[in-house]
Image 1 (cartoon, rainbow, N blue to C red):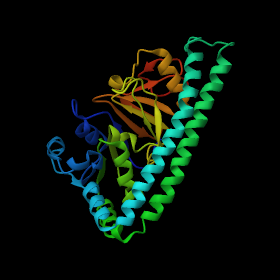
Image 2 (cartoon, rainbow, N blue to C red):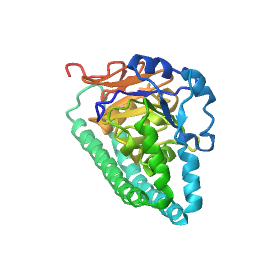
Image 3 (tube, rainbow, N blue to C red):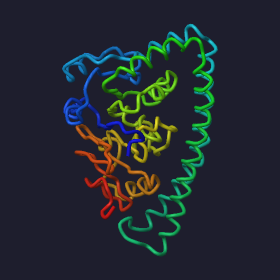
Image 4 (cartoon, helix red, strand yellow):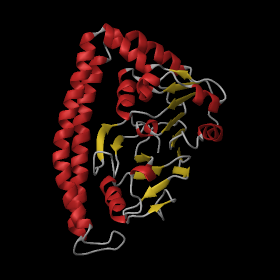
Length: 317
C-alpha cells in the first residue's frame, strides 16, 4: 500500500518495452509531468526518447547539475557528502562480513530440505537462520538511516541549497505527475534527499517510478544480482528508500539478474525479506497500489516455497 492517498505505480525497465504512457493513461495521471532522472548522472538532460514516448516534454528537476553547482560553491557541503560516502562504505564492509556468514549458514540449511515442503527437522533451524538475516538487514538499514538523517538534515539548511530546494518545491507544487527514472539508484536517492523532493511532494500528486526509480520509492533499497561480473553476488540492502511505496521490495531486471528457476535461492530471498512483498519487475511489467493492496500486469511475486507466481496477494489474504 502507498503511504499517502496518491496514485502510485512501479514499473519495470522502459528501454525495450516502454509502457509508461499506457500506465499513466490507465491511472488517469496527467501533466504537467515533472521528471527526476538524476540516476542518469551526466545524461540527465537527454530526455528526447522519454518526451517522444510521453507525447509531450517532461520538466526535469535537474538534480544532477544543481548538486554539482552546489558542490562547486560550497566546499563544506561537498566534504560533508563525501564524508557520508566514506562512512557508508565502511558500514557496507562491516555488513558484508556478517552477511556472508549468515547467508552461508542459511544456504547450507536450505540445501538440506525442500522449500515447498514442511520439514520438522531442518525447518526450525532454517527459520532461525532467516530470522538472523532479517535482523542483520534491519540493523544495517537502521545504521544507514541514522547517518542519512544526520547528514541530509544538516545539509538541508545550507545556503548553497536554499534557492534550489525552494524552486524544486514550487515546481512540485504545480506538478500533475512526478516521474522517477532509473539509472544509478544510490545517486538517485542521494540527490532526491539532498533537495528535499520527498518532503516537498504534495500528498495527492501521482507518482510513477521505473527500474531504479521504482526501487528508490520503496522502504528499503535492495541491491541484487546472482551472477555479477565480479563473481557470485549476495543480495544486500543499500539502505532506506523514500518510503512512498512501503511493504514491497521490487526487483527490476529480475529475469536477467536472478536465477528464478532455482527454487532454493528464490525461497531464501523471499523468506529473508518476509513479510514484505517481493516482486520481480521485468520489461513491460507494472505494479500499482490500490485501496485493497497491490495489483499489476506481468509483475510476479517470489514466494517462500521458491515459486515465482503471478498472484501478488497470498491465497486467502
